[in-house]
Length: 462
Ligand code: ARG
Image (cartoon, rainbow, N blue to C red; front, side, top):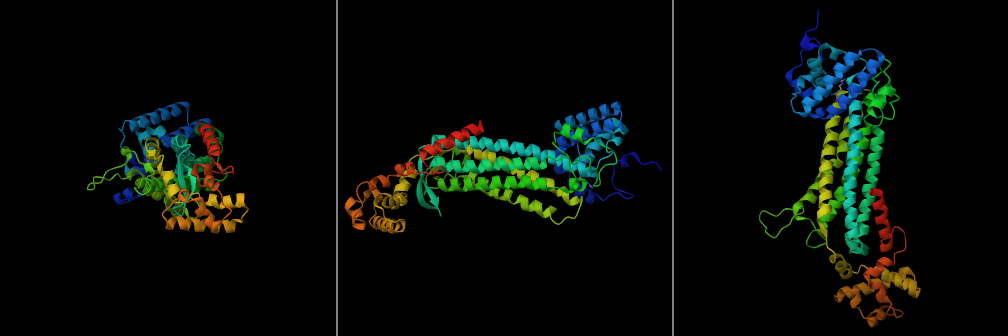
């Protein structure tokens, strides 16, 4: 009995699937986003089929023309994918059949949707890793610009959110440059981990046709093929690498946004979020809320959970392909979309907002940020063991707090009351700016070394 024409691409046997199942089973709403990758993969595949003699030159031309026309229809929003055709792969084949007739029926020779979808997804992750790297670099550019502007702006460095020691704002911002630079490396890893062509694995056991995998790699710009077809169709580790990179970047964005929210509060007064990225309150006229940063903080924490969501899908699955994998794409797309907008907003916030120049210095003075320098003064100049000098300075700070003084308000006589060898060179060690220049190690906040770091990153981002 000849097969009915409208059934020719259907994967259901004997009985039609219920419409509820069609809805449930289909992924077209999500995976149509892979249309470009799927068409590229199919173009490479038909080149290989032509080389094998499975299709003729005129078949090849017809198929390629049909694929171009599908892409064009899609770009012009003229195509209406259906859930009955399940996913992007079946939909494209369906429309190709409609456009070029039975030549399209040769398309799926020697391959499976299992190797097809894995390859499409790898191409998408490679493309998206590069794209996110670019966005991170843009953010880094504006963080670096702020660092250059604030080469001599002094702020308190905190531990436990308590004023600890004076640092340069530039030094603080450069710490984020380090984090974002590591994120670039994570996305490198995600790119490289995806760079294995799965085509040739077919359903799971490999193809019955000696498809030229070198040709496929060349066409699709993969550097190599998978070594094992079963790993080929079931490996989704590359998505985990991608989501891990997204999570790391999101963690860094959430730290930065949380910090800036804090700094923009009245109590800190160290940062002013640009008006374009803050909103007023509907009731309190004096308010300026850093909503943009609060949203980045929340969204970043959602992105961070995507790798857990993903690992829940792949963990515990025996080999090889299961429909479970169909749920993978939604997760990586969501992570990408949310991360992209967070990066863009953070970049613009960094570009347009202002750090306060004076507030940090005042906080340093008010909260004894150079107390450690004073302890070191007694070690270096007076040969007092550190544990003892620490105790002496603790007493001095106590005294100052009780008498509502800052360190520079304390007279020499008062100092000498705690340690009689102290002389007036102690005031040098109270000075916040001098504290910075006293730092010796290469990773320190010494302004000379911070300048070097700024130069390093300007070269790196060129
Ligand atoms: N839409 C499917 C997915 O995303 C394509 C692969 C279908 N393979 C299969 N054996 N049913 O995973």
